[in-house]
Image (cartoon, rainbow, N blue to C red):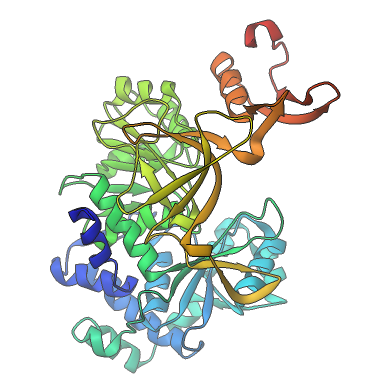
Length: 473
């Protein structure tokens, strides 16, 4: 076991809120930790006190170890609500407010969530009144504005004394206990709950820190939702627990505003997807995003055109990462100065991988992973509240990948997105990428249809009205 792996194993034996308090004690109390979407700056002292005070008030409405839904955009409020629940031994369940009431209620049933914490201001700005009305029929909705009004003198005392005596006044659960619950998208049925222990989350933060070297002066910019593991672990908890200032933005869709905020805040590390990053760069004047040193992209393939535009127009590198919610989420990533096109870099320290052969596909296999960051198990609506653990700790990602002799990982696609044509496996993602290379300004999707002679055939659907077949071939 290497030194990095030993360090990760040792440092991951901490609860999430305890890890935050450890960092808060190391840093100056008046250090700005978060810049919110409205420009408001919060120091570590303010976040710590707000977490303890809000935690005290929420504790009177909830039970120890209760799973409590959090329905908030990427913001200081979302992180304070997360820390507040963790400080009193509750388990935050991060809910996707874009998924609709049906999926949200299924997620609540799976995790046995009976209370959801949100904010009236968020509901009003987002236009979620109808959604909250539908949710209120099945669960109790707790508004942060009401909770703040119910903060009592003892909560304020907790806010003052909690940071001084954290071992006495803050919950300190076993690192193997559930820390956060996230949910799959529900695109293939009802959403499943992904139970991530405190150790899973902290281990992944330590793994990322060991893999990607940063400067002490770096400032993070995160517009990604905290109901997605990428936005929560990498975009929020990684900087906050390691002493890096982070700028939050409530939505990644505001493509004209985000480049301006990156410039105004002097942010150096951006979290995005290839699609969003391309839109931000198109909306920005030349040099407008030049404060960035790296952009970390996940969730989809990074195109060569995106990397070239970032380097040529703004002078920053684009690192592509790969992960799954079940991995807390990051499993592999490029490193600054070591980017190999077509790969997502090397696996993070302490991540074990094995490839199972797939009939009709050479040089790649179905990826299984194991490590300290891999989830405790699933929750499902069929067995509410029951965590179904993994067999021997191995998680089946469902992705087809290849790993070369140097350890660089290439993602070939989802197993479900391969067509078997005459005994050969053909990736729908590759077909779509080819179409995007030929017609980059259009949308394309590949689908599988039956074929009498070869078993299956690939059909390309495109919004390019004059798409000549010969050019694509």
